[in-house]
Image 1 (cartoon, one colour):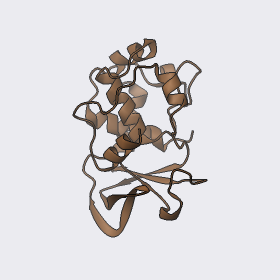
Image 2 (cartoon, one colour):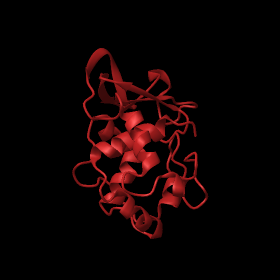
Image 3 (tube, helix red, strand yellow):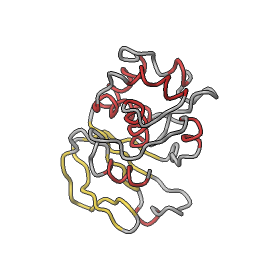
Image 4 (cartoon, one colour):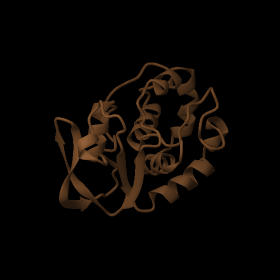
Amino acid sequence: MRRLGILLAAGLLLDGAALAAQNSDPLPYWANTPSHPGRARVVETDKVPRTTIGQRGMRAIPGRREPIGRRIIEVPENRTNAGPHASRPGFIAYVPKGSVAHGKTLVESGAGAFPCAACHGPNYKGNGAAPALAGRSPSGLVRQLYDFRHGARRGPAADMMKPEVANMTADMRLDIAAYLASLTP
C-alpha cells in the first residue's frame, strides 16, 4: 500500500498492471488499511508542488510547482510530523480543478451503474456490509476501484463491484476518489 501511494503521488493513475493483488474480500482489507480518515485536505488546483521521495516518504519541494495534469498528489501537510509514527499526520491531496464536482455527479448518478449510496450508505459512511468511503485517502480509493476493475480483488464483495466498475475510466476513478476523499468521515 505504501509503494502504491508513493507511485500515485508521483502521478501514475494505474493505467498499467495492478501493483498489488489482494485475494481477500474488501471489508477485511479496508478494515486493516490505514486510511487517515478526516486527515486529508482535498485541494483542487492546476499546479502542484514538485515532489521528491526521501527517507520519510513523499514530500513537497518548497517553491517548485508543476502542472497537475490528471493526477492525484498526496503529500504530508507538515514535513516535520510526517513519518509513519507521527501522532497526527496531516495530508494534502491535490486533485485537478473540477474533479470534486464531477466526482459528485458520478457517485450520485452511478454513471450507468448503481449509485454508490445504494450499498455504502446515504453519507458513504458504510452500512456494515460495505465499507465507508467518505474521507478515505484518494489514492487508496483509486487503487481499490482499479483492482476491482482489473480482477486483482476476489471474493463475494469484489464480485458485486465488478459490474459497478466495468466501464469506469482512469479519469472517472480520479474524480470519484477526489469527491469521496473531500467528504467528512
